[in-house]
Image (tube, rainbow, N blue to C red):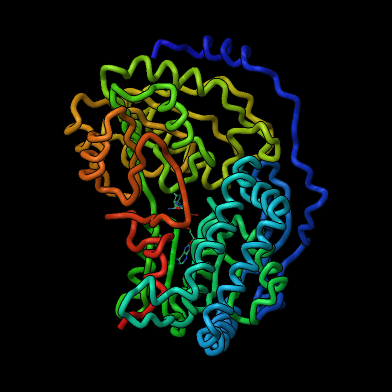
Length: 490
Ligand code: NDP
């Protein structure tokens, strides 16, 4: 706690200077303009409207994509409905083959996809290369394995596909969220119409090429780009039988209201305000790494980010000292550089949201700590930030910031930790750091969160279900549970 800005500058200077290590981009072909992926091919849009997608690290335009209108969405849903008739009847082992093929192609094109994801979204290349793309491929591989085993997944039932799934995804993990949505839907015999986020449509466009490369039957996957209106057209189309949404709680509620009474199935994966709880017997250095991974990974643009650090009072001082020291070693800058830890904020709007919430924290009386770091002149950036003296009523402790901003609170007893951790409208994830297995179990039982990590944070695996309670949504993605929203068991 005693560490000052001056000391942090001195610390930063002690860090090794690294030579630039930019990832090559010459092997990546981004087209100047994309159409829509409907019926197995790229088609021109009825809307005739396009909008640019930019690189948030440079503010330069990368490409233009379609702002799809009602007619475009209707064409996509019709193509998906037509494809459903034969896709659902295809022997399940043949469906599995397509999923395995897609998984293989994602691996083959992983370097290209990692660069596209980083340029379009701003995340560090080491994250898109080591997390987003391998996990996306793993997801298709995993659900490919389930396609011909659905009767084992739901014993003594007769699982049947639902029809066309309308899927709307956010900008924080564009390809991974696409994989979370498309893989289980296809494995269960459904067809899909997917809308990627406005600021990160490009990896979905590469995925459309992959579907063509994999010879996926026309119409099984359709991708329509656009803004929120396109998303609402997808979810409210009368021929869409199942809606899957990941994004803000606000839009999740709008969708729930819009489709209420239509009989459509719905899963919502929404926001979070996770508590990362460190007990006095935790291995502190390991916990510091977990805290950093919990909130600064992907610039904090993570629904399950550990944005509230709850530290046992007796170790608050040494832990914060170590954490501040560690923050001064984080490298912010060019997301394409392999040494970068903190990349660009995804959009100007998101940057303004983060700035506004951080200002509110200062105004409400919290103490802000930011290590010395050089902010590039162009692009959208926010330094890794940490708030102490935070009260539970402050906005920074209640609202999802979705940026690299950590709020630190303290507790004395395990009961107090549980009470504070659960004192949120959200319930997506939590972390517990302690040496005692019994305490991990005691805490996990009491935590109102879909995922509780023990002595780790932000671990993902396709075999493991993920999803929330309360305002974090409902339904699970991943694992056998992830198949359930895509089958009719009646
Ligand atoms: P949104 O919830 O608006 O966006 C998620 C997706 O929904 C995007 O594809 C979006 O399109 C689309 N969409 C927007 N409005 C509608 C609608 N009425 N009907 C159907 N689809 C719609 O998130 P934002 O990008 O605006 O981010 C705002 C905040 O949401 C963030 O600051 C963060 O707190 C939270 N968030 C949470 C995420 C999570 O994983 N839980 C992911 C992203 C954001 P478009 O891109 O054009 O807006």
